Image (spheres, rainbow, N blue to C red):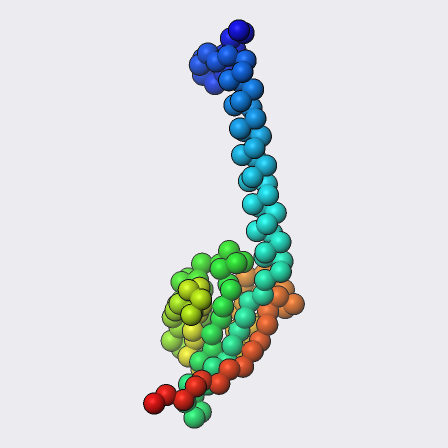
Length: 136
């Protein structure tokens, strides 16, 4: 049995050294795979901007999937509220994901803001319109 000095004077055998090297290589491979998966997910995903009718003539604008582009949603909501002088908040969707809800019909302005501020290309921004269901 051969003894080798590794990491700060700890003595390990050659079999243990081989196992440590194998584990390190496996961990690095997992991290690389995770990074490539995140890049692919980011390339395939889109920021969804929805104009939702709230009443007869009132609208809110909802922005979803910003977190996939490494955007801090709470800070983004605050910036939008300041820029557009409206109320903005972070809410949970039915799927459990976060989205930003901004008061008013600001679809075009928000699209421009997202492209300029966060470097997201216009191809990765989808605009949709939804009608709210009747309550009662």
